[in-house]
Image (tube, rainbow, N blue to C red):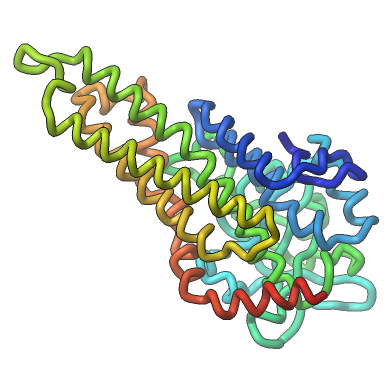
Length: 338
């Protein structure tokens, strides 16, 4: 599950991205959201840029053990004042001799409490905000790295989410992924795979919730007849099932375009936006049909209602990406030219 798309030379299977999506869909059968998310960070969120642009030395040092499951990886992008606005990050990596000296901090870092290394986005120059950033492989056992706390969350409680600070952390310049100043571009490319993975992992749970709601309302009786016998319940569940199939079709179309080498920023953003909203809509609507049982943690729908009630899937990043498409197309062309 950790090596599907990665190159065989470093322990991967060398298959195309559609196989990642097949695995992500299947992981949705786990009745827990934190596990698929943690696997997604390891397999397709913290590692695509390293796989594509990293040096052979870096890939041997960080990618191979991550694929093998010997290392836990995390992604250091968001900050307290720069979540959706990635260009506004403040963490710096100043070159001094053959090292970068890192200062700043990261927030909402999935697997950050247990990670062996971080794919870190930091400002490496004073240039324009979209061209002054770089991605760096940062070992998490270096002096000056402080894991402030494990954040207590409304949902995804089985997944550790860390707040991390950097104080004069020194890392070799050779840990730079690809070219200096191209980090923002590399990260935008990583976001495409992250968004699609996120969409794929919600399909199966939402399908399960709808089916379990049908079964429960068929046997639950109110006023001497099953809840499902009411036409409004039939109509609502049919509508939700239809919305889910439309999301699945958008995902498959986007993945097919991505496998062919296209920039799918727009469609991936649309799919993640729709997935986040549909996750809230399905869980909220279905929860109403469970009555008092829906208020307990014994049923899947209540657990996922809590998890998705303020869903990170429906991120403003997806909305903002839809308004920056011409600029993203320019970045995509630059990467392909290089």
